[in-house]
Length: 170
Image (cartoon, rainbow, N blue to C red; front, side, top):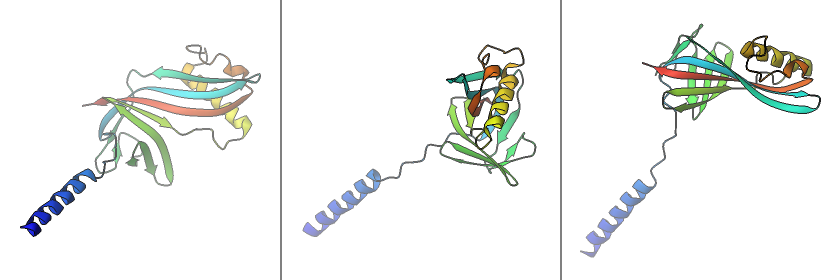
């Protein structure tokens, strides 16, 4: 009787430990499906006369591109078609030798993808040139919403991050 009671206690202990030690699942956004781009933004960090500015401009799209992330790790809607991997919140898109990465967050039916610094590794002059061109891309030559009115006077730029906002489509 002692042996069977001991065996039952050991069995229960093993079950409790097995349940308590269950591996937590990784939190991975539900990326599979079709997504239509709603807007894009660029976050630009630049300097004017020694003062640093960190601005984000937005361009809303009336009919943006639709991208489908398939469960087999491929995409459609992008030309050329890419393969992708999603590890945690890091999305990696690949086509041939080309690789693009972004941090992805999904809240309800909205997906936000923040890309890498587009001007990292460029010379100071090229960083400034690229930052100014992205500001014009987002806001147009008129200055758009006024976020980038100082960028024409910028003397240095350090960061340009593309930010895309998508909505899940059925």
